[in-house]
Amino acid sequence: MVKAEMKIHVKDRNGRDEIIECDAGNLLMRVLAERDLVDATCGGECSCGTCQVYVGADHFARLSAPGEFERELLEGLTNTQPTSRLSCQITLDGDLDGLTLEIAKPE
Image (cartoon, rainbow, N blue to C red; front, side, top):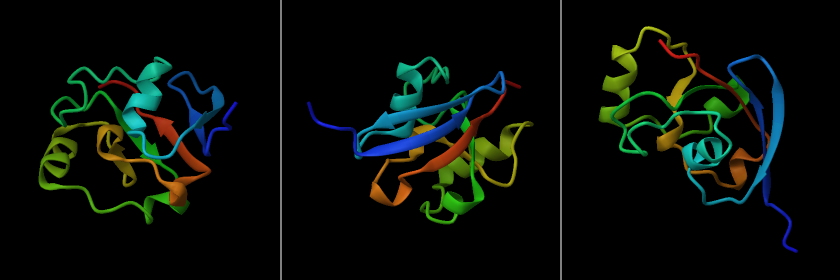
């Protein structure tokens, strides 16, 4: 059995903490949606905002800057925070091992 490459520390919408083991290369949204932690209504097309997460400060700086569509969508949401990102726009890699995040509550 192959061991998962990385761990993600997640606080769900009910405030429960969970550690998820997953492989690098996955979209964060897919990992979270498989566990019913985000809705991901648009399926990763960066058009709904239901996969919004608040990324821990330590890892936020390691992410590439959000693209135009992601920035526009986040600007239109009322529940964003300074470290808000759409999980459909984050590809997990080794630099994000130990990532901490909180799932945004729906608007």
